[in-house]
Amino acid sequence: MSDIAAELAKLHTLKGADYSRQVERIARLGNFHPIEGEDGIFSSGSESEDDYNNLLNAARKAVTHGYKVYILPNPSKTQSPDFIFERKGTYRPYELKTITGRDSVSNRLEDSIGQCNRVLIHLMVNYKASLLAFSIKHYFEQNKNAIEVLIFKGRKSISVSRELTQSKSFYGLFMKNYFK
Image (cartoon, rainbow, N blue to C red; front, side):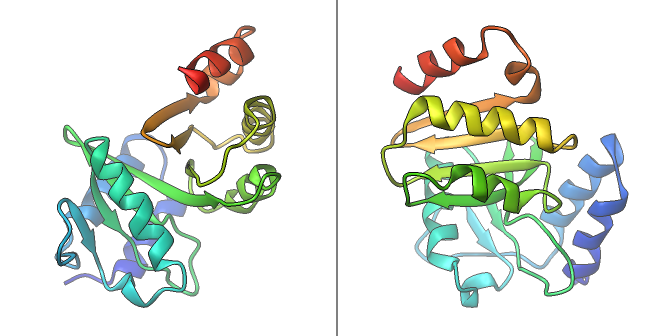
């Protein structure tokens, strides 16, 4: 078994295809075991983390959207993502932001800068769509490395890319997807 903390730290030095290969390498390490009673969710010993229940709830939701989920440990000296999602052979890391309050998306997105270039927003409350769209657009403006914000809202999954936020029709398209 490899030192997963060292492998996660390498993510901060890589870009492009090298970054993607490292994400896949981490998921394929022998450090992960299936979580008892769960299908498609694997852990590397993060069950003792303070936010484990939030991680597990979001992982369950991801499985319903067709992902295999690897819950990552939280090494104390390295900022790292919370998950690696795999679907159809594509591996992507995500930082989880569980939203339980009505005005917290902007702050939570800001907190993720430097941890991962993809963020998963797991909405646990009804959130004003226009405020959410504005917060996501602002996040992409602040974080030049950001690639995607994935939103789990009820049974829905909404993916927002940097390119979409730069479109003149972003707000209209976002609202359409949010209320669809």
